[in-house]
Image (cartoon, rainbow, N blue to C red; front, side, top):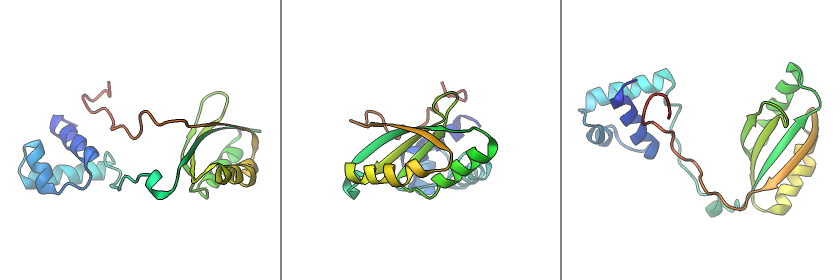
Length: 156
């Protein structure tokens, strides 16, 4: 991946709806080479897809929480069952497996506190192998959806 590829990625990260013509202008290429590079970046997996960034507040989703999950057991079957069950919960917008204790960090979004409480009591607490849930409420998003640092190939 060279400097031009990183420029292409930075531009698409900022605005995934750019046409190839607009993108080519911004990175200083003609349309054909730009299109080839974008296609190569997509095929390599560097570009995973394109999506619209939605505003949760505008959609009535005003409540965010972080939920820490400790499993009863950490064997492969328990981990797989827990992770598979998360796919059925659209309110879990991000799930990360952690080293140490707790085992997982879930980012949850709902319309309000009662909706979160219902999700917590009826669904999160009954997920496979859950030993303990601990949650904290998000007061304010300070940095959210920050673009990846593309200044150099080491990410620094």
